[in-house]
Image (tube, rainbow, N blue to C red; front, side, top):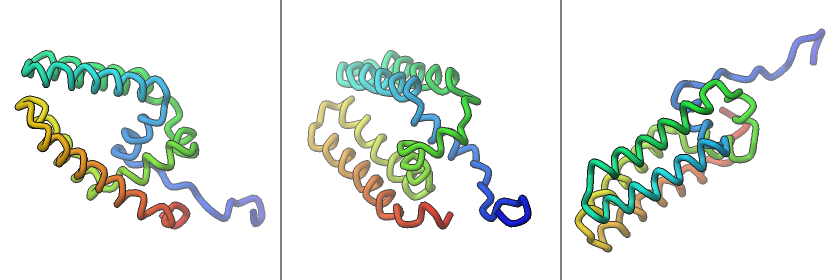
Length: 138
């Protein structure tokens, strides 16, 4: 500190970063995982309506239950920092494409398509992890 002023100012989180950081909250993380689990089950049974209701419903409930729960504090946690790394648009694109391919593979019961979708998802994570050294610079 110099004369009572902080040398480094924390930047304000964007909306997309807040949404990603909310996944670091245990309630939201568990609700999202439960929604994905049931969504996968119903997609495999080719029931798109129940898959969407469970997957999106649990995710929305999870986000709504932690909205405004000190996202800045969550961003300082280990998992929060990881979530911010993955909030980059390129990584989001990897996740959207991979998730779509996995969903189509689950619905059509094609294991190879599911594996390709998961591969794309993991490449997105790999790209996010390649940015770890940038944590202090952004």
